[in-house]
Image 1 (tube, rainbow, N blue to C red):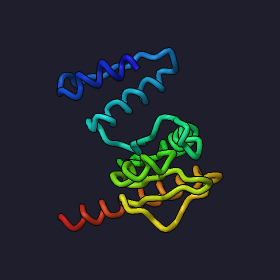
Image 2 (image 1 turned 45 degrees about the horizontal axis):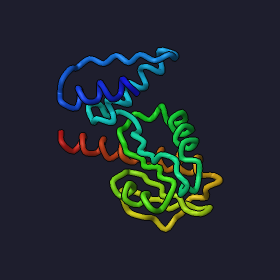
Image 3 (image 1 turned 180 degrees about the horizontal axis):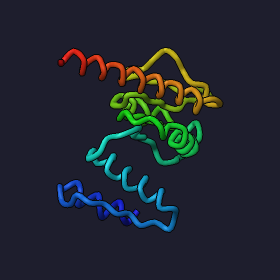
Image 4 (image 1 turned 60 degrees about the vertical axis):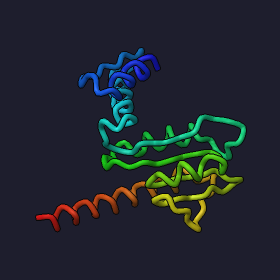
Length: 155
């Protein structure tokens, strides 16, 4: 946390170009945390940027567990994309409207957003992680294909 605050302030002001995070953990975790800081500041964009809410009494599913599971499952996705995972319908729609994929927690079933637009399809909270992973992977594949088409038409 100390590293994130201190380095984040400097980097957001354009000061510095080297980043070293020290954790009492595996050095691999230091790299992940450093990259997450750069991603959140939009200095580097690679992979899924998760936007999640802190826990509160309104959440309708385990937000932290969902984000942790998806981070592990989606480490191989390198295409930059924003995914909002919000546990309630109070804050969820606003965050989902500015994300590639978004979820707003509801009682037993959660609202699903694609490119900021609410879809008729809803996610079953008991199977949320699997459903989200499938949608995120499909979205990443579609965005990647669109990027290839754009690159090819510019030549």
